[in-house]
Length: 109
Image (cartoon, rainbow, N blue to C red; front, top):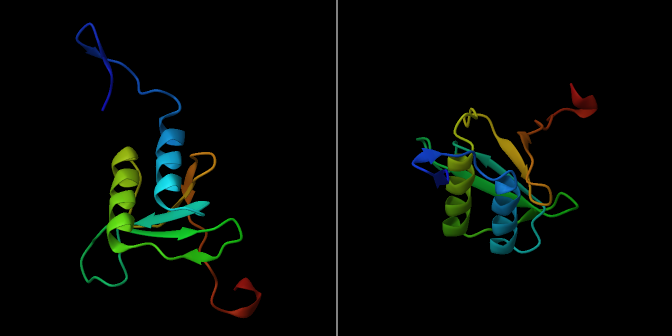
């Protein structure tokens, strides 16, 4: 929510993304990256989904409640992003970028 000054909205603080990343990192200990999308593989309908990875790229276990809450926070903080595609939030810098798609075949083709 934007801060208000003299009845007019002001720009959000520049460190807002970093504060969000730190809050999620505190919620999910050991996480370095959060991958978020609007497509939960366990659902047939759109639903916020989060997977957390440690600094070595290993998948961490996240409860459904924590994952859903963190995914909603990230999605709401970045409304202009196309959430049909997965995005990675770096929890150390607060940087959001499109997720790299893994290739199923050898050689990356």
